[in-house]
Every structure is written in structure tokens, then in C-alpha cells.
Length: 93
Image 1 (cartoon, helix red, strand yellow):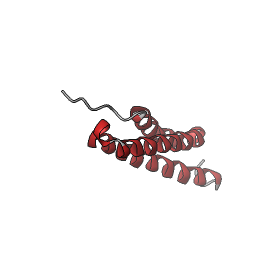
Image 2 (cartoon, rainbow, N blue to C red; image 1 turned 180 degrees about the vertical axis):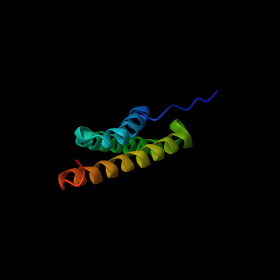
Image 3 (tube, rainbow, N blue to C red; image 1 turned 120 degrees about the vertical axis):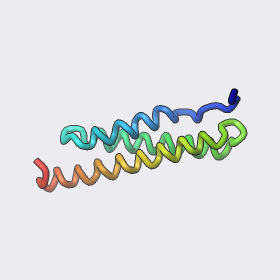
């Protein structure tokens, strides 16, 4: 059995990051998707910093989970920004 703890807010950060991807594809949810991605990025970066500062408490899995959440959050933020610009320029209906 593993005695290491999960990084705080890791599940929330990953959920927000994953949910920001399909939400960005809907015209009405582009801005909320961007906000969800930014919140996920902040939570994942805080979790990564905490996992790096306390490696004996969280282990390498905590940093790996944070890295995945950061990548998903950046992807969701980039997608929502691109689609927001396309909707604002009236390229997309």
C-alpha cells in the first residue's frame, strides 16, 4: 500500500482542465471555458510547487499528475482563446 498523499486540488484541477476543452467548442461557453482553464492552471501550478517542496509526502506521482493537468489547462486556454478570437472576428457564426 502506498502511504503517499495525493496533491491537494489535483482532481479538481484535472476536472476543470478536461471540462474546459469541450466547453470551448460552444460559442456561449468560450469565456467560462477560459476561466476554467485558468483556474485549473493556477491549481495545478500550486499543486506542482507543493509536490516539489514536499517530495517525501507526495512522491513523483503528484508531480506527474500536476504536469498532465498543466498541459490540459494550457490546451484548454489556448483553444478557448483561439475560438474567442474567431467568434469576435465573425469568422465563426
